[in-house]
Image (cartoon, rainbow, N blue to C red; front, side):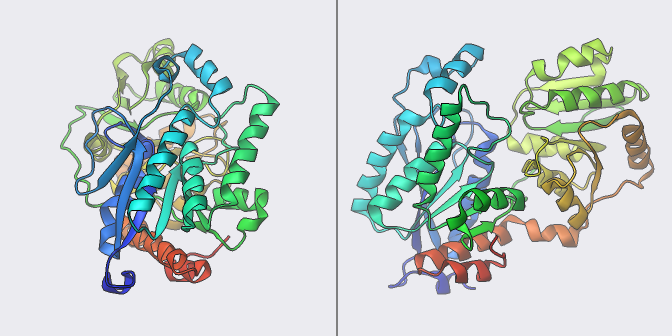
Length: 417
């Protein structure tokens, strides 16, 4: 459908209020999905305006996007790192440490909606506080709201609750918010299925809108040096057991087989690497810009994917891995979204989280070295190009703005859950 056909009455582009936190300049992997959509939405007749939190950081703000920032009046000591602040946040910050941003963001958002005409609201979590802001703004304005999930909220596998009351509070807040959503989207089928099972009123209004890769992002030229390099980019989120099993398998391989972990805290990897005598065969780098992470992926001989233990576990970086044209060694549970993706497009060699890694890892390295390791089919992978995915998002939004969510799902090419 042409951009012109998607314009609102009067020929103007439709305007979308995007509630996003985190957002640049804050450096976070959680910004990638939203930033990529923002890059392509104008091509499909939607003008995005971002409502976010005041923040500092090294990430470059997307050009040409108007941003409205609301303050975060929470004591800084509770927003910092460390186990003590994490415990305090778990007790008092429901649904997340940005809960005190909700009221200022709603205030700013209502001012904006009174001053200008918008056609829809979009928010993407985590953090779930964005859904609270968007729900309040949708309720106040009557605008249709699309609630997007990159990870579950109240059933997230890596969230621990101090008490049963805290768990119940998250569930109640999520239900309260979603009763105000015109539709929901999620990055994979298991998350959609979980949402509909817990909130039956979402049946017919829940859609899979996957992550993908964006050709507009240019990898940096990097060199890893001599040897066969396995590369992992991105955080590990409590997957230390799987990483320990991988490193045990790595230790059994020839010394020229090495591993690089990018964007990972040293404490997640280094103790096991030192215990196993891996020394400089294992490198760890702090968070790097996306272009450099993409460069490391392309410089690798093989890529390491470490998923969680639940079916919805699938990091967005898997699409970057597949686009890099390198074979992927994936630690992923049976029935996971990641395994379904590899079955669809190829490129993955999968093991279970509790498997012994030495044999499968050795076989993977041999196959990668002799060129027989599976690679993604470029034609199948094309379905996950960001221009196409943003067209699906725009189609959903078009349907909501026109009051036709079912029609939006058909035009987007996705079946409702």
